[in-house]
Length: 184
Image 1 (spheres, rainbow, N blue to C red):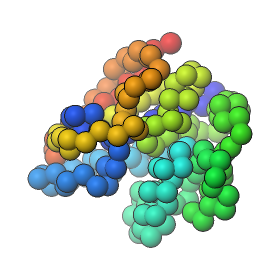
Image 2: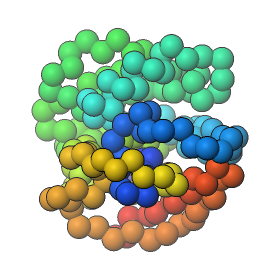
Image 3: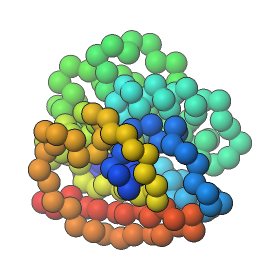
């Protein structure tokens, strides 16, 4: 069975909302960050996301090209959970609606590579409630932004879960990538 791997950026004060709006770090980027993202995307054949994450990503990625990360992100199959999105314009995008949990269960049982899920909000909570999330990769940014939103990682009404640390990578810019497996 395929795994679903969530990859989420988070600040020290627990904010996950709008990482593209956070202040830039005062350190040069670490090239290993892109390599980690590309490696993850190469082990996956689909990206799963909610409507809000889709709107942000679809406004940026299609305009990018010429590097392995952009090429892979634009080519990979994208699965968007939404009851309102009807005609997605981003290439290779399919909308999932109705009994979303059941549809994701079916996708997980299909043959193929793993599925990466970006963003942490209602879709992630549904995955956790249904026991469908297998791994959580937190990209912990060494900054605070002082603003929390309903989509923040462990907001009220979060599903209880336990995670086992499977690895970590400290990048030169201070970001730490924490890899957790969902304890079963």
